[in-house]
Image (cartoon, rainbow, N blue to C red):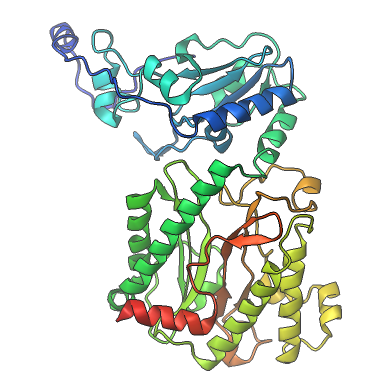
Length: 464
């Protein structure tokens, strides 16, 4: 791998005298208290599974590279989820190589020795004085419990399967082969069923998210008085995510009033009106990069209006029906169909759609008001395992240990003339995280109320 010093365009020149002075007079800061990360034994099992799937082949999985946000300022780095899953490491530019023998080696950029070079005080991307300390080689080997080598020693000779599109330098080292797509697919599918450690991490993410939602409700009175009240609530949740985790798992959606009809509303620049609903779709990402994904639609006044409650109750009934289908052996699409059946029945009963529920399920006319599917796998990515084949994911069957969201919604657009005026501009989504168990599913986010009566009581208790 090539190495160069990343200095700023306005960096001051370094004299020979200063360079010599900077190489001396530093205390020994090697750490003696480093111990293996809790993920290490689980990551070792996953690497063994990967090696067994492609015996006798070289497999290359990079962590990824830094991405410029503005000139010489990078976005915060997050490693590729497959790399994190297999190593627990997370610095930019690292590369996991599994040799044909099955031996794994992690190539890292270790901290720069003080007595050689200028990286530690001049390099704005990797220098310790600019971005903080990295482990040295010995520390990395202890942390990750895998053989470790310096990134500059990475050589990829001969055929290999590469997780491509993650690190251009790694891509350039190996000619593209027909097996790269198969590697990417397997790295996605192998994460469909979570191990015990992953389920615990996801539960931790959900628990922090619950506390974040409580914070948001408490902040509603102050946010109501701000012209960008949505951002006030976004910031409150973001604080919890940084205090208890790495950050948010995805850009939080804080959508008040008609903004809730925009599925991925992340501008969050609107004001809050006391009579409106606010849709909060947010999740804390743990330090190990597992994320929750929870949505609640809340009355800013603390109580639902009659039409708001009517719409909310239909979505609640749809979600309840969907959750009841979850068990090992059920088809992944079953829960969505169950939710949409309830939605069709409700829209028909309201007189919004004249066809029978059976006819609506066939024609899909109800989708004008629902727009999207009702859930997805959850894990290291908020939409986890997205590179999996349809036959083992979307068209597959559920297995014990899978974690998924159930999130039906109704999005009644403010300019939709097929709707009575009182319905227009209402958006309601309820989303929970569940893990498939031996005989059903466990509601991981059950600490947050779902039923409208319980939501009102919960909010009243927090707003006292």
